[in-house]
Image (cartoon, rainbow, N blue to C red; front, side, top):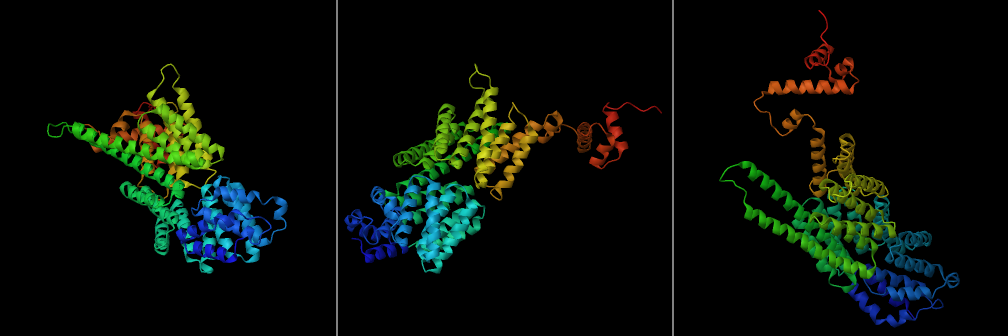
Length: 542
């Protein structure tokens, strides 16, 4: 039989984040846990305790499932309330492992309701943390943050400082997602100080991973890789943490891809600048460019290797969310390498993985990549036997769906990315709808807040540049936007621009001179004079 003293020891070890000590104790008493039955005292509490240790890396999922099967519904009706609460906690743990968030939330809500009524605050803290994680995974950041902060307060109030620090790591991540990076870093540093001397490698690894995501957001890709490498080292210390390891491998692959894209932009800018120099001393350095291209491809190959390792873990553990994110990242890498067929296959695979679990985050990311691939096929007109407009329409449909899917989440950056994708599609050579594309650009900027250093902001800048080029139909405007004025004086350029502007506003305002005068705050006489000069109005008889 399981003694209360043993359960107390395990709960204390968990509260103090002495993970190895608790794991050793569990291994010594595996037989007692394996013999549990509904008739035994403290049986339900024992299952709940086991579930909490499963969550911090003790490998006992099969044992816990077997034990839960020994507690059919009729037997649960006679359990003490405290046992029943912990039994529900165990059910929630298994549902979370199966990525069944609705089922997990159903059990957790039961735990929270009963625990609050009975004053079981330590259980309230555990259930709050798990519920917040489920909500975070679903992209419901506001609700997750509220639950996290409430749970953190409960843990601090009952003296569980290490547990409160674990809550802080989640709080930091959620604040970061909401654009409050400074607060996120401060809270993360506080949590790291409390947990530094523990062996809670999950939370310590998550802290390093969050630092890495912040560096990634700020465009500090080399620093991001260092943080992700630190998280990988921590997760490798226990074989049971391979799921967390896979996530960090996915993150570091993303950092390598962004670094490769940054290098590509540098290569292109340097090459164009050198070619434009048109002098013997500044001829393009072909050898230097070749070396940079080799480095770029090396980064992309390394990213592929990291993603392949992560995918193997996710496939083995049947983690749809993780496998879906890996597939999205692989599709992006293949797209960067110009392998559109493999990119298309991986993007479709990612969408199917997301759809299996109604994972709107993965589904949205997959549709964005599919739209990007379709745009690339349209622009390059790959497949001469097919109508290129088919790819343009496919891109439009995928981008529109991505915006809709993003609306099911509270992920502001993903929503911004979806709008950027839609804008890029609307401004392509098939639709050429600059007004709608500009509206998408504005929407994306609203969602990006102050994040103006990373790859997503670069995507927005590229979209704006395309909108500007597409909207500049007049040859003079096109030349002026490039700084080309020939031998014209500033006064002449201003005069020509004035003529162009008055003409366009006149056409847009229904050829009503009074409207043009009101819109541009000039006299109707001046509008008439310009339009006559352009031959758009007949001379009035004297």
